[in-house]
Length: 202
Image (cartoon, rainbow, N blue to C red; front, side):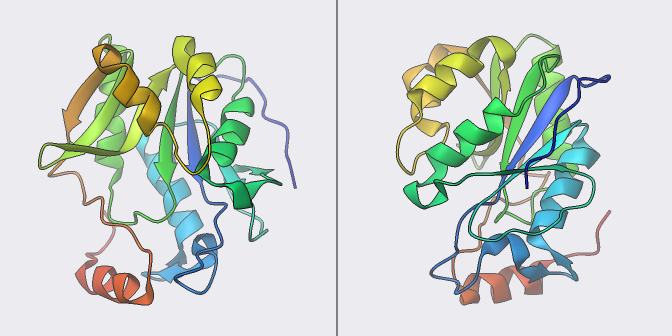
């Protein structure tokens, strides 16, 4: 299931975490249909549209081809998000300057949020995180120089958040209230509610 990431002209890698089983939802979130497309495809479009290349999709509970992305398998997906992020970070090409991390179950985030994070990185932010109503959520961008330390910090079902909290001096918060909504899909009711709010894609 794993493809090779090549180093041609890549600068900002996108990682989409899509390995979970979606137990409360009753089906792996990656394959859930939202506004006429699978969440995994929507996530790839988000990262590509925001300026990431390549996009690495970490799969686990559900295996499926994903057009326009490199797919990598996390055999330990049941242990939680940390193992999936570790697998995704390991797939970054050597030429990547930074990595944007996004979750498959937040379909209302728009590419503008990714663009703002990349812009902040280009202007000198070591790490930048999208905020909504003043609270840090996803996505997040991490400069290459901190990827090793982030990887070493990963444990259990936590992603990058513990590392960010431990190093607030490295983190730049980027308001993204007008660049989408970080609401996620955990249950069928969430899917119905967010589907009702969805606007036509830009």
